[in-house]
View (spheres, one colour):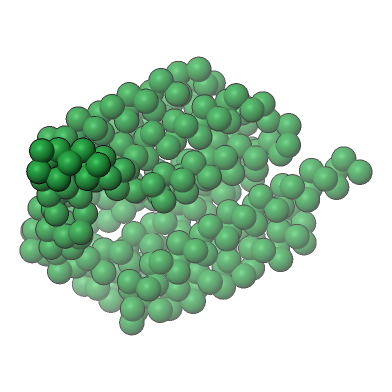
Length: 291
């Protein structure tokens, strides 16, 4: 379908859907969280806004180019997406992703060198993932896990605090939890991935083995969540929020052995609740320190 067949509104709607706006908003929120966890209420506004914008553009671009490369698989696994259903042509999606990547570069150029380095590394990882790594057993999952966790580091780097201990732990927790969720999602998508000849972890090692790997990684993520309290960085308020988040994620990984579709969505909710715990921990600490 093009503008002549479905009208410009249908094409624009398809382009909007390509970005997966929910994911864009979530990624921007993660970057903001990284900035706040690293610096509290003292961060300058301009670099935080630039970092959030760069993350949003890069996430949208990555989603669009991923749909371009995944268009054959999506005919089986996600036929409702814009390219398989004909709302947007593959070529249009590719050009659109290029424009979004350009927007990310423009937004990031004024940030500190560490943030620019992370942005460049992420751009290369995104391109390599969609073209090379996605179908390799476990490798694509690790790349996605890094990219998700790095949004927190990018936010911390934007305010000049890339080595902040809480931000580093948040990066590790998010990366590990995302790796677990990506494995569960691969189990959910096994049918379409096998039809396209992809060699994902569940296809190569078996679904049960893949889920056991995901469970082990998730347990490591939950263990990492205790570090800020053990180090004295955050106090009881952090524990009060992160403990329910841990329980949600652990229950989700248990559920993955019977219903991976529901489990991966529940894992995502647990991950966001864990991010909230870091915000609460930093906010309470900042207020307490000011009193």
